[in-house]
Amino acid sequence: MRIPSPYWLLALGVAAPCAGAQAVDTFAPAGAKATLSVEYVYESAGKKQDRNDLREWGSKRNVSMVADLVSQAPLPLPTIQALDAAQTAKLDKQADQIEKMHTDMAPMTADIGKIMAQCGEDEACVTRAIQKMGAAMAGTPKADAMLKSGKETARAVQPGPARYQTWIATAQSGSYVINETSLSVLADPACQPTLRCTRNEVRKGSGALPSRSATSKDVGLFYAVEVDSVKNTLTVDPQGPPFPLPYTETITTDQPARYQEVPQAKGPQPKQLLFREIAYGNNKPFTVALKGGWRSQSGEQVVQVKDGGGKLTMRWRFQAP
Image 1 (spheres, rainbow, N blue to C red):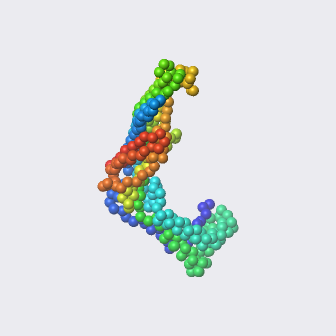
Image 2 (cartoon, one colour):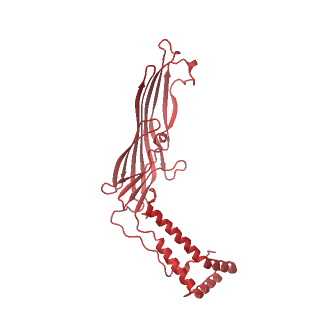
Image 3 (tube, helix red, strand yellow):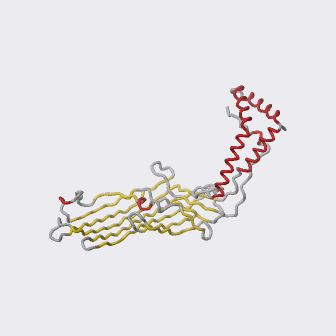
């Protein structure tokens, strides 16, 4: 049997407020479609040389992703962005008021608990007992205090007007290209007669990335966009490619095998790398000011990669019909 709420007496005096109306085209209808295209380009090149050794390298990794997005119902609070100080303070105030109401309602909750224990599964008995209790309380200071607490709580927890709309991914697909070379010429008496050992490394790979949809069970979706209609901004959560990227590595060296710390495999070798190891920490959600209407936005983010050096460029475009 459904347990009646101790707050049913408040229903006659409290009504939930409606969210404020928004300007035309501030938000898309819930369920609308859009796309987010993201291209990641990692580049690194350099040369180091001294009296004895030479090291030279060049690396370029390109990943292009397209995510299909669907709009969610507008909300008064953000989903992707962090709450600001005013929003946090309001939520804290709401929690305090709800806790106060629970305290104010405790005697009534206890009385209903007794009624439930006495009536058991007899719903008619529960209804009669609660109606009798309500009639006895009507107009008493206790009832007035509870009604006041309920109204104060209703005012405190009103959600406010819709401000944010989040778009989440329902499907994603992409492709990638890896092209890297490395040359080292190191002083080593094992390499006769030049006393220099040469090592060439070549890594190449390309292809389509696994497509994912909202029904995929093995890998989730990693893209989202959020519009802030008050600040007139767009927040993009790019996350970064989560998939391992297959490539072929070919290493040649004239260093005698007996001097190699790790015996070098001959010929092309299949390998994988996680692009996200490069992008990690550099592709966090970011917010940009809207340029014109929110339906078509684009931009570029460039960061210097600390670990391993190089530069990561992320170009993105959000497009809604």
